[in-house]
Length: 424
Image (cartoon, rainbow, N blue to C red):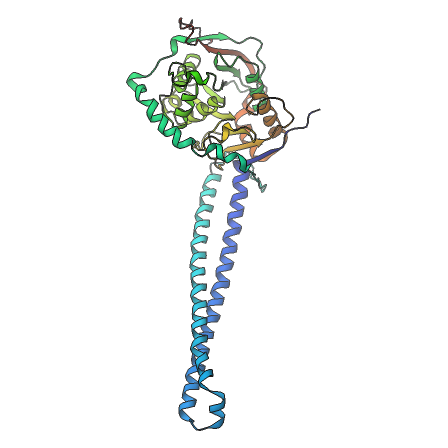
């Protein structure tokens, strides 16, 4: 039996709780340090007062008894010169300690403000049980160079490619979509199932896979999976081949008219109704689309997003939504999640799972590897992953699969209109 891949998990309620406790401890330590600094400053002030008093007393004694042999032998010019030197040294040390005290005050205030932010985050924590577990993430340093220019390149290319795709000139791809039932699709109950479902589809021609479930309480929830990049570099500049690398760079620049976004929006509209509850899951480019959908006002006003799951997607630089639980699965050997030059931020409902699949043959960017990482996270018992994962997938436990649908599209080689067959 293959051993589960090693994983690191951070973010979520347990990570936030651990950070909050660390901040509280740091604030306590800084308060203690400030008390010690105040005591040291007080002692130095006492030393200054004493040395200053001794100096003036010695001067007075030398003036009063200038011919006294004992006075002349004890209070020589050399001895008298040490008093100002001592005063200068003690004054300098007091100045340094005072600066340290002020710096400590500033740090303590910053830590206190950060503590307030984490306390606010806990009020949004979806009722999860808090944990003291600290999750440590070790980032492989050799991977950083891949991501240095990704965001500037994304913004620049977004401007360059976005000019022909203003709202009044947007490319429409709806006529090339075709919606058909997906037969013998497996039931999905957790993130690993979604990855295995994705492994079995023809990603080259599939835009979306949707599965509609009837939950135990009578609600309907639709799982939507979005595959990743498919077109090759030869179609880099073709806006009518939307799932290419040009779209990737435009998406990194958050261009709302990126061809891949147009395709995703039109495909999703063809298989959902207003008010539908959906779980959005995506691989690579599909993960970008799923996560950026959190800030698509038109989409959010039409459907209710119950959760977002990404696999191998560079989404760390994109802000999340405090009201939507989100999980990011990343393979440490996969360069794609690094392309936005940042890791997903710590959040009470945003969890990142990073794994390593050395025993798996094939690309580190492949979905079978991500299925293993998702399974390992689920069996780890980690409270952050369990809480956020449960918020997304718990309604599917015991649910009945009503229908599965594949939305496919025709490439430039065949632009004949696809038959619009609604699955509902």
